[in-house]
Every structure is written in C-alpha cells, then in structure tokens.
Length: 311
Image (cartoon, rainbow, N blue to C red):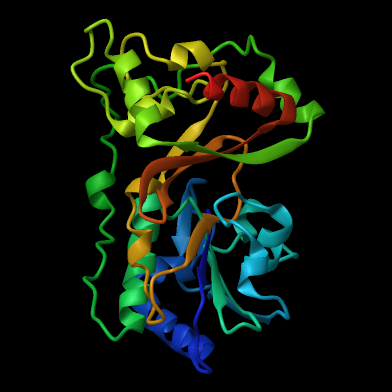
C-alpha cells in the first residue's frame, strides 16, 4: 500500500525533523518496525525485535510540478519517490514500513510511504500517518490500541448468516487472459455530483432500494464486478464483467489533515494500483466529485471508458 504526499514548501531541517518524529511515532506504532515471520504452527506473526524502518533521503534536480498528477499512478515516478528494497526475495522479507523523503530544487518535497497491507488497512494506515504528522507539529495524539484478543476467532469458528465476499464468479469475460496478454494501464475517471445523482436515480428507479450511498453508486460501475452493498438492479449491471476487484474508498479518509508542519499536502496519490484494486479519491480543488483510479488491460479500459461516458 503506497502513498505519496507532495508539499510545496520545506526547510533545511525537514528530513531530520521527520526522522525524529517518526522515531517517536513508532514508540506507539511499534509493530510497523517489526518483521513478518511464522510461528511454530505456520501462522503469520509480527516479530517486533528483529527489524527497523528504512528511512531514505533523496534529492532531485526537478521541480515538484514535473511529477504531474499523483492521483494517476505512473510506475516510473513511483519507483523514484517510494523506496523499495531491491534485495527482497520473498514475502517474509518485505518491510512493514518504508519512508522516502525527496527534496526538489524548488523547495518542495514528497513523502513516499509503503505500508504493508498485512499490517494496516486504509483507515489504520491514515491513523498512523496523521498521528505521525501531529507529533511532527509538536502534538500528542491518542495512542493506538494493539489488543488482538478482541479479533480472535472462536474455537471452533462460528459462522452466522451468509458471507459473500469470497463467492467465485465465472470469468465469462476472459479477463484473466487479458491481464496476461495486454499491457495494463492506469486511468482516472471523474464522477461529478450530477453524474453521481444520475447513477443513484437509476439504482432507485424500481423502488426496491430505499437509499444508495455515493460509494455504492460509483462502486457498482466497477468493471470487474466486485460485490458491493447494493441490492436490486443498478447501473452496474450494464457494466459488470466477472472477476475480482477491490475498492479502496480513500475519499472518506482524512489524508488532507496530514500536515507535518509545512501545510496540507498540495497533492496526494497512491504510488501504485494493483490490478485487483480500485481507488476512490475526492476530486479536490473545492470540487465535490469523486475520482476513481484503476488499472486494467488496455482493451478493457477503453471499453469501460465508453460505457462510463454513456452514464
């Protein structure tokens, strides 16, 4: 899970300040400085005594405007702004957190983070980032709760009610082969309030739904048909193709409050979008639309673009 924050101003001490405040933040978020391992029963565990966090400082002769729109991931740019250890050989070697601060000649800087999804989802990842930012500004954020017993499964596990997240769908669209044969591309789709309202109206047209959230309405257009919490006919039935896609609703996360002391980020984006991910972001610049970023094979992306244009 990679994220990049771009700030237009900095100081001579930016790197040192971030490094020192990170050390303080990791006192509370200590599992992020650990390493993934296996216990005697073969289950994944976090070893908190064998690892540290890679903190990389980089300097570029570019200006921050040259990186383009961070909302649309560019692999070449991401590789330069988010540190990845080239010596990684297995999943167990992957660091749980890496940090890269890149200083630009214009005085701005980017903060590139890579947080293992085994440790944090979007909400908990942003909790860490915003707590780190608050510490950098001299604050004292609330400490996180690390008690895992509340999430411990019953022995034996007890299942109540249907659970559809892992329902298998026949790949009649042959998407798997497209992923192998074609070049995958990233593209950003902007849904204005008017377009979102039109999708909701179509979803509610037959009266079987009492309401439809913005997230559910836009997620129903997912080209790979990942199940969403929308029942009854929706516009998504026009666009769905079987497959597996996961949505990350960053539009509801407070990344805008990640002020490390140099103002709110001028830009925020994901460093990469894996083929099974679909990322939701706020449109920004005072606008109230939703931006959706995804990666698809080029022919599927072009088809999806045509269908979205018909909404």
